[in-house]
Image (cartoon, rainbow, N blue to C red; front, side):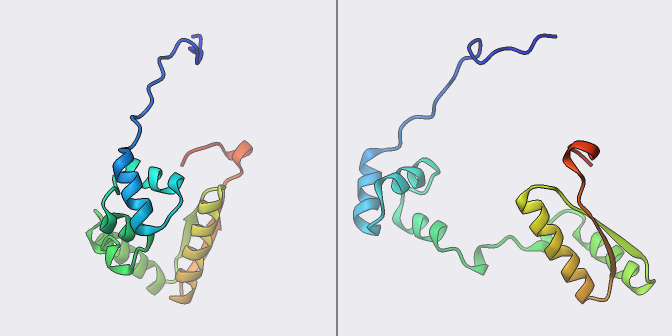
Length: 129
């Protein structure tokens, strides 16, 4: 099956951000125009919204307990720690995957868990779980 070339595809570009909103943000926040264009394009055209996006705080974070299955996951991790089971921490080979795996392994180890980190080799192990 042939792969369609980029020439055969119809490219659609987002509309340019509102120039008045960009100018207002630039004036009120004293930020570079390019950054203000990005903020407006991503839905942060109001000053307070842009400030909240650029300077987030812990109150903006999603409550972890609201994730589906979080209670079951925590219970299973606790059981593994209490029974001395080894927990496999399956990571990813990109930068955020390696960092999050390291943080996860360190946190579990601090809680007394036995942890075996696994970061797949991109070429040997493939791209998915």
